[in-house]
Image 1 (cartoon, helix red, strand yellow):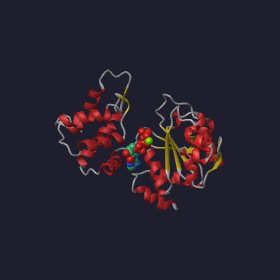
Image 2 (image 1 turned 135 degrees about the horizontal axis):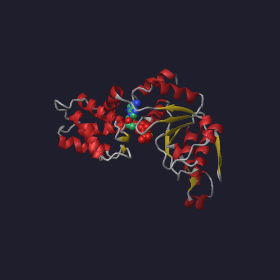
Image 3 (image 1 turned 30 degrees about the vertical axis):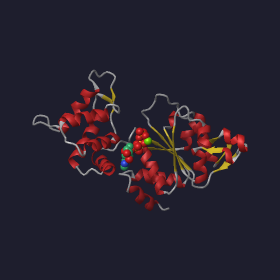
Image 4 (image 1 turned 30 degrees about the horizontal axis):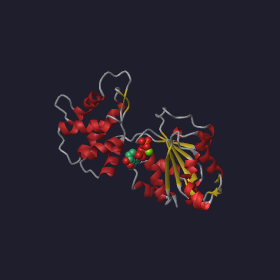
Length: 284
Ligand SMILES: Nc1ncnc2c1ncn2[C@@H]1O[C@H](COP(=O)(O)OP(=O)(O)OP(=O)(O)O)[C@@H](O)[C@H]1O
Ligand SMILES: [Mg+2]
């Protein structure tokens, strides 16, 4: 499919990201694997999913953690079926990697830096060699359209391994930043069908400010803005409704600076008050 057509399809579901879509599409055509790097809520999964849809390829997603072994990715044998018919296709439950290889899918490896290097290397080998060996089953060949996108969040260090050198040597890196202002408002409008521009502007301003606030080490993303808009779009905008909704959506998503003595609640309300309930003295 030509690039313009893919961009056209992606545009219906993605705000901005034209350069990124172009890069990924060219990378897919050249079979160069891509790592999408970005903080939580920057659109990594949505970008991968939308490109798979535009290319009309199935999308297989896995989330990396220490238990994601190469067996989970390749597939396994079902013991009762092995008892019945022995080792073979009939007793084999294919994992997402084998499914993607056979069906020409887009294999989306989320949080790749949390996965054991053995699993990452297994996927890289499948991409390089276009085949993998499954013990007791044999060689599985990838169809032409099989491709993999990796994603990682640079802020997530806990429980993560340094990625193998071979990884960056093979992949290209595409970085996504938080969308702010007008683009973020368009994302919220697209995801919530909310037509209240005043509400969306306030929610985005608030969300952007959680990221620039010196009280927070990590602020919130457009995902929080989408949720808050959904909660408030049909509700009265009084403090007894708005503040609890803000706390409910944002308190688990922001991370306080370690030297801040204030509570999360206080920090959130300090930012929210002049935006949602401005007085003459305290305007936006
Ligand atoms: N550019 C964009 N266009 C349209 N929607 C977007 C865009 N960026 C983010 N979104 C929306 O914001 C939300 C978060 O995006 P997404 O789940 O892709 O983030 P992520 O980077 O995968 O986050 P995480 O690291 O937490 O998995 C989703 O509802 C998604 O639809
Ligand atoms: Mg994601």
